[in-house]
Length: 369
Image (cartoon, rainbow, N blue to C red; front, top):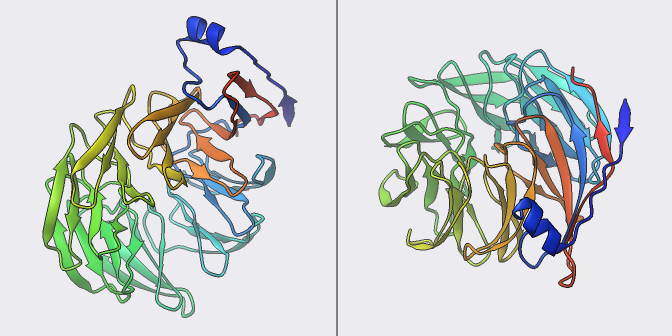
């Protein structure tokens, strides 16, 4: 294992003139980043455990466990790519699916507890339903319900692969999208209660249930949809590109999501545009909430953007790699951001309106496997 330190400090004036403000803009004056180099692309988004450890998987087949400051705790080698986002279950077990067909179960320190093999590669996050059941999709065109207590699988066959992550609704049912262009509402026994058909794949875009019970999600037909749990359309909002990202809702009610057209959109609950922000390339990443009025989101243009819920830029951090996965905001204020060229950044911000500097420190280099 090799370690190196990189420190770069520049004033705002010289930084603007020499680098076109690639790393920083706005009133937030200092970034501090701890960077881990993994040697494999990250499409899996990071999640944090109850003790704020960070878990994510890579296309180099490794599953990584970090502290909230970016120190590597543990690594587990699967037999296939890790594309799915981990899920921390109610008992604090970490579950994660793989292209090797397994769902792995770990404790918070990365020790393997168990694994199950339902059949087919697993791209999706799992959702927890009922007393001890998990719902997820596979590339075999199946929505699977796994009863952990009885070690029993139930399968709902759909016509194409299931690449959309599920959401557990307030009534205990589950919403999940598929490449058959449909969003399904199912119960914990894999029975279809309702469905809604779009004109494009539903890829990754995890449905979000609003306080009024309606469900919103994105489709590759360029629309963000709002439907009732019964599968009736309430409204739709059309963007200029495919929607891969999941929508999130801020405390002020703003609905935030990105599109392949390069914009981050801000809507109200009625589907009316309240603002938008243009990045340099596609926005595949799902936004994360920093506080009631601030979000952070990545772009394929290699920047991590800090925005208000009105679509105003506060700052951006240059991640030096395309950002596909979603950022994670930790309890200590750090933002975890991973890239398609194998970097994991633990980014913190200091506020000082009189100076503006960028620091990258404590970068840990791990040779690729």
